[in-house]
Amino acid sequence: MSQVAQALIGDSEFDRDTAVALRAPGVPGVYDTELSAGWTIISAVNGGYLLALLGRALGDALPHPDPFTISGHYLSPSTPGPAVIRTEIIRTGRTLSTGQASLFQYADDGTEVERIRVLATYGDLGALPDDVRTSVRPPAIPAYEHCLGPNDGPAPIPGDSSLLERLEIRLDPATVGWAVGAPSGKGEMRGWFGLADGRDADALSLLLTVDAMPPTAFELGLKGWTPTVELTTHIRCRPAPGPLRVSITTRNLAGGFLEEDAEVWDSADRLVAQSRQLAKVPLGHG
Amino acid sequence: MSQVAQALIGDSEFDRDTAVALRAPGVPGVYDTELSAGWTIISAVNGGYLLALLGRALGDALPHPDPFTISGHYLSPSTPGPAVIRTEIIRTGRTLSTGQASLFQYADDGTEVERIRVLATYGDLGALPDDVRTSVRPPAIPAYEHCLGPNDGPAPIPGDSSLLERLEIRLDPATVGWAVGAPSGKGEMRGWFGLADGRDADALSLLLTVDAMPPTAFELGLKGWTPTVELTTHIRCRPAPGPLRVSITTRNLAGGFLEEDAEVWDSADRLVAQSRQLAKVPLGHG
Image (tube, rainbow over all chains, first blue to last red; front, side, top):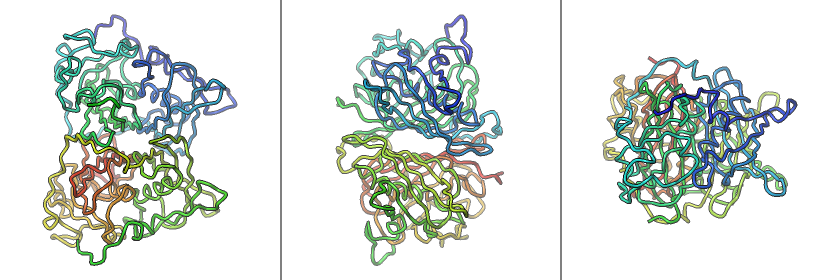
């Protein structure tokens, strides 16, 4: 990574832009926030960033700190600007607690419009035992210096969006054919992921990571955006410092929908997050 | 299959046992139901059966008939007996609508105890275009007559539970080592699935199918049950008549949790459902 001064967890762009503030001491579970224009791709607010905002609010509302599994259903497109998050504690237990959260923005007449609703079960990643019986191996991604960033290669990666300035993504050359008009035809996208200011990953930033790579649809030869219908993420382990490896796979594009499965690996070769989303196939496909 | 008279969709055990009744004409979205003892495994009500109950209520409450994606968070163990399902319509659109549903049972003093809460986005499977660009192939499962049922093999498959009488499951011999004390060590469970009365599959019964096989943990050498924390299912296609093939995979057992990924294929070789659950590793593992 090229950063000189590395931002710290709790004092970084990502932390400032996912901050939530209790509306009033007497109103538990209601958080005001501001959707930053810094996490938009074209004009859409990134869906993983929205999950991280909701995840932070739930982490405050629930007795456990970390999202173990969070399921979000996307209702209407978000825009930069003010928003309110309303949380509900559904159940609290010794090791797990479950909550619900909705993010609303405001129509011109001031009425609240719901953007995304999530159910999530939280726990404490730091309290998990060390047993690991993983059969899956980290994805085979070339070394960081052999992967391609937005300014590498014969054509710049399209999508001249704020989000890309805040991320350090280096794609496996085997999955960037789409950027030069030669998609592989395989529903795969792989690469290295970091935050541009050098902030290390934590459970909250992983909620962003799973939805921050270019869509696999690009490598299937499809253009345009693939709107997320639903995205569920499991955080399986507290990530070690250092860059992450992300592998996204689409195996079934059918009936106008596709799934995107993401795996995120940390520098210690631990599988730290798994996610799956159902998304709509871009309208202008073919 | 061995049935003489085949039960029809809408007139079968599964349909009767997932029936829901509007509590009152003036109370939209509230459904009374009865959890049947016929879908228990040991003493626990099957989690897929619960999803099907909630799915049926939401299919009635929402303007679209079929669950495209349904995410359930499990809160407390259900027991056979009366229950109430409370639904909420979150958003209705032209092609998709999103709702929420909770299933409650009654404590001794009559107060409602929430068992499971779901978010779901519905559409119309019959309205989807025919495009299929699937790279994944059906699982390699031996022919039905070469797979093993509860009464085959050197030892009966344990779990002498009502659920097993209502299902026609035939497991791939490669994934039944656990039944004779020789688990493969791989997190895989594969086999044929049907309902015992011969009722064909539909979107609702697929919600049961994804959670009806023996847990992959058995093949990992673990004993006891793996309680579901969260289960999300995507229904991708209306299933063709005939038996289904189900493949369940666990790739990452770590920190006391594991995921189970299920794929369900129909007789026309279409991937009809994908699901993933996060579950707790059985306590008595080793």
